Image 1 (tube, rainbow, N blue to C red):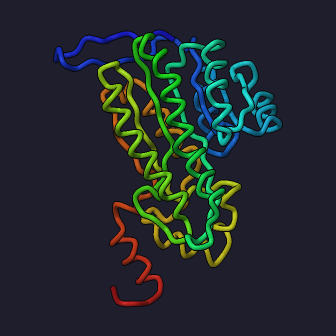
Image 2 (image 1 turned 135 degrees about the vertical axis):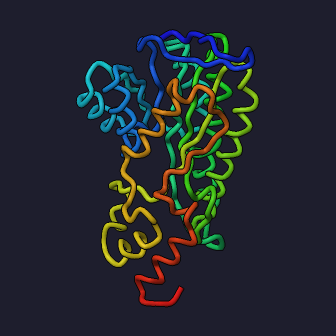
Length: 278
């Protein structure tokens, strides 16, 4: 993959496009539902993937599914002390990495007064500090290579908090702030940094919301009247990585079926479903 500068009508406007598929795209949290959807979309387009996850068995399954286009590396991103060595190893083997999908996330939860230090620290280690360390460790090589694109998986909870989720919500809000700051710092180096914030996504880890009474309650809050699917998120991530988003940086694309933007409409729909006056 070679990044080339394209001419534009303005001397102040430059766009970077991928002109081959030779280089890897790094994806963390690669064996989760969204991670697998991203890997599938990338490999379908002929782009090889460096898949990181803490589950080596699941990584083996991913490699068996997608074949030689997927390179795997088992690591625990909660182990911050091991991260510098991990990044050094990745740079030695695969530098430069010009496309990063920082998708790994955890959400252990508890009410504030019952939350342990361990729950708080795990959320921030994986959801915020790990992406920060990846940016700090991998971006210098990306700058030398002439540019790149980075997408972080955030959450609608960065915009609308929920009870009993203080650690997760705060960590995702912090990640969003990191994305915006990084976008400003790296823009002149032609490195774009964006986020995608999923709403309610149907995955194995959210199986309980498929059952009543949760399903009816949640769907009344979503104007599109369905849960999101992993491929809904993967498509947005691929857009942010690609040339069509060449002038997009520092943005957070919320993919929630209109839940946040149309909150008043959602409440109206919920009231109507319950036979109440709005």
